[in-house]
Image (cartoon, rainbow, N blue to C red; front, side):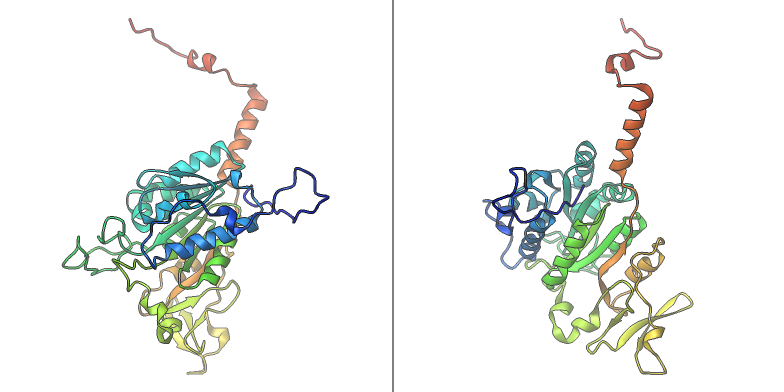
Length: 352
């Protein structure tokens, strides 16, 4: 169970009623040690604001992290937490969820932690569809280790470890999540906290693996990462919001959209050359196929704007529910297990 609604309590409430939690209840006493102006502050604040609305007791919430600036999250939340090793947060979280399916389990990772050494764990976690939430904080740089290019850094990025420019093509986190068949895939941004709040709550209420890429800058080593969003003159030209069942539109006056001819996308302007709203691509987040979501996720930049919102949101059986069902079925057929009998079954050897 991920979400359980808690009503407000009155004097007549039974002693077993859940207490009404507030954002303050999820703030730990630890000093926050991010750089001034880091987007992590906004992400932390929004997570702390969403958690009380879920109606889940703090002792039923676990945050798991790996290594990096993002991975300080468990210290700053007054819940249970586990600070893992580099890239292994998804593996730890899977173990926690399988052992305790009743817990609300969150993974907080970064573009370096989750998409470099941790890519394999991340993919398998998403394809299994455990009921947990993955937040990938993407600043397109290694911040904690002082500014090397990361798996999501753009081609040609000049850093301390790529002084002549990176010659690697960047990973698209949304495309990775879709290819792994994650049942909830979304992208939000630290410069739009209202949008982030909506996406985080939708992810938390989803039954299955929720993957949310949160775009942010690194004020010290990659301050220009979100420059096109911060500039109001370019924001609506460079970014677009997705809404299920709605034609995809963008532009300063909302007069631009995406039309598909054959399998090729093109930017069109409403009213020019007979283009009407009916000609635009309509976003479908609930389709059983990942094809359209992947199509939108892989639109090349800067020719096309970067999409924000929920790319995919579908329901499928969760791994832990099927695991418990398998175990219960085996016990019903064969009775309770006997470890000593199991160890001595079959062919055994005595080593002298």
